[in-house]
Length: 164
Image (cartoon, rainbow, N blue to C red):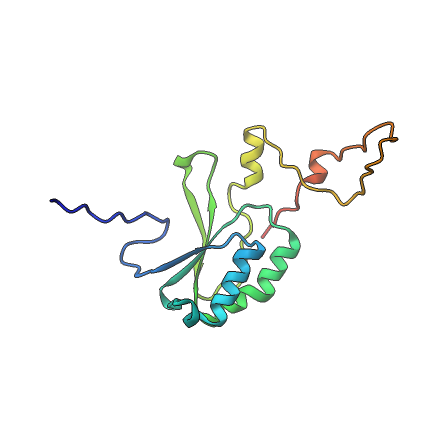
């Protein structure tokens, strides 16, 4: 019986000679951030060789200022201290054929590049989709209200994108 060739997925900026065994997708959310922080504080407990690990981040252009600040202040120093390869990517355009940009590829990252050539907002606007962001205004649940609360304009609900 013939043996099938092993499937090796293609990742931007990587070759089969990179000698990687762990690729972590970091979305900057609480769960993936907690996992990375825990892994960096005790890699042996997770069976991870940090020299053969890469953390990928896809810049959306819509990260909250607080998120960017916390990443720069706490997570990037952890990645630098442990020499973990951190690759920051962004889309070049709307089409798959436009490809991706490598914003940074370093074992000593100094900053989070939260915005690339094509943002998530650009993509959503190009297809007529506008995300809804919860507002901080209180809403009444009373049935005696004669009219619904006024909706904020889409521009005011748009997260402040990172510009670096």
